[in-house]
Image (tube, rainbow, N blue to C red; front, side, top):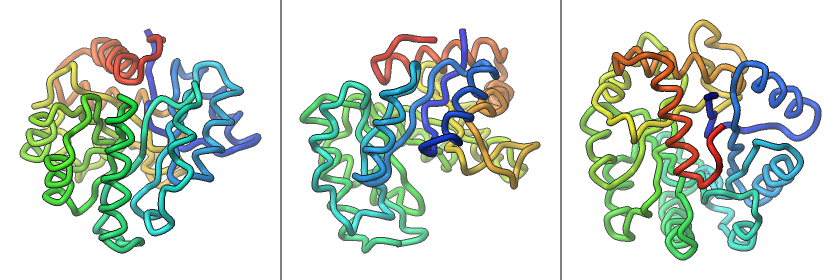
Length: 250
């Protein structure tokens, strides 16, 4: 068994190549590199197309929702694209108007439904609004709240809608107590791990550039929160990711 970093942002070119090779040496068997705009999703597709064990998503992040999602649908036909997103609401930064965020989110939920594809959600400072839209549009049968930042109550609301929780390096932070409580309450078959690299490097690398090779540190923190052996969490999260994205387990 090997770890899966199911949510990272690889850079095109030599840096991305280096990160992929480093991850493999660290025991990370699968990577999903995530799209945040239509143009950047094309770049993620190209990276995935040229590297075994790497897949891509295609989506428009709430920060970029004002630019619309035109052209996104056609990217979902590519065999290396395994999910819609990341998409959702971010009311912390409000880089796009909230009505544009909501419209882009609803439209991407619709794409996930129409194609029976997984949906990758980003939500920040917008829990109630996110749940309201999901309840109105219907939560796709395979949905994950990436970089989950809620507590036990928010986790329960996500799980009640059939979604998975994905934990990032924040779970290793001293301030991550609510996350650790949420992980402890999460069923083993509904948990995923990620780096969200190059952001949110886990302790003891906090403040440095994150990379997929560090996902075992995230997994170890999740295992500690769940009071389970690391190997059990490694096997479960890898199997969960493979089922979620419909690729072979590493």
